[in-house]
Amino acid sequence: MDEATYQGWVYTYDTNKETAMQIGVLGMGDSILYTYPEGNGIIKSMAHMDTQTISKISINDGAIVEEKLFTENIDFNGADEWYTEVDQVVQGAECIIEYMPTDNTAISDYGRQAVNDKMKSADNDDNKLKISYVEASSELNTASKDHATYNASNISDDDYHTAWVEGVDGTGEGQVLVLHLDGIHKISKIKIFNGYLKTKRRYSINGKITTAAIDFGNGHQQMVNLSIMDPIEEETEFEADKMGETEIIPNGDCETDTIVITITGAVAGTKYEDTAVSEIEVYGY
Image (cartoon, rainbow, N blue to C red; front, side, top):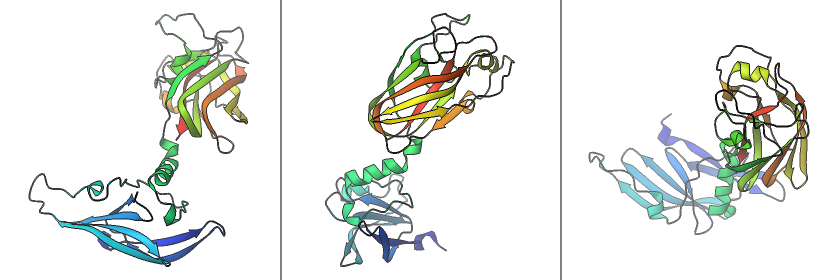
C-alpha cells in the first residue's frame, strides 16, 4: 500500500460512560497533527511529493468535518524550497509529537495546554529531570590518591565514575540524601546507581545500599531493595551506566520538588564499610 493512502480511525470518547465510539475514517498518509489553539478541532498537515494541504479537523453532529485552510504546490528544483510551516498558517499551532494508544481525549478538549500535557505524559519515561542541588546528612572527607572527592553533588553530575560516600562510622544506615528538583514535577521513576562504579575494584571494596526508604512528599513513601552485583576485584573499568542500577516507580501519582532517600540497610565492601552511590536520575514531567 502507498503510504500516501494510509487512513486513521477517529473515535469519540464518553467520559461518563468511559466508552469510545468510532465515528469515521480520516486520510492520514504523510500527515502530521497540530493543536488548534483557536477552539474545537485539530490541524492536519498532509505533505506528499510537491503538494501540501493544511486542514482543520472538527466534529459536527457526530461526523468528521475537514476544512481546507491552505494548499500549495512546490517546485523542489530550488535548493531552498520547502513546505510552509504550519504555524505560519495557523498562529500558535504546535505539533502533537506523540499520542499513546491509550490516550482518549475528546476533540473538544484539544487545546494547547491539554495537548502539551499529553505530549509530556507520553514521553515522561525518557524525560530526565534536572536536580538543582543535593543535600546529604554526611560526606566522606578523606581524599583518595587520585584526588577524588565524595560530595553529595556527585550523584547528579552525569558522571557514573564519581560517587557520594557517606561519612559516618559503619555502613551508613540512617544517612539521608535530599534531592531538590528545579520545580514541581510529576515523577514517573527514579534510577539509583548503587555503589562506587568507577572501576570493578572500587565497586567491590566499598559499601553498597541494600534497602532504602524513599519519601516523594505528600504521603508518598515506599521501601525499596537495591541491586547489588557480585564482587569483582580487578582494577578495570566497566560499563558503569549499565551496572548497579535500580529503577523505582512511585506507588501512585506523585508530584513533588523534593525527594528524600534514607539508607535503611547497607552491606560493607571487601575493604571499606563506607557506602557509596554513584548517580541518581529522576524522570517525569
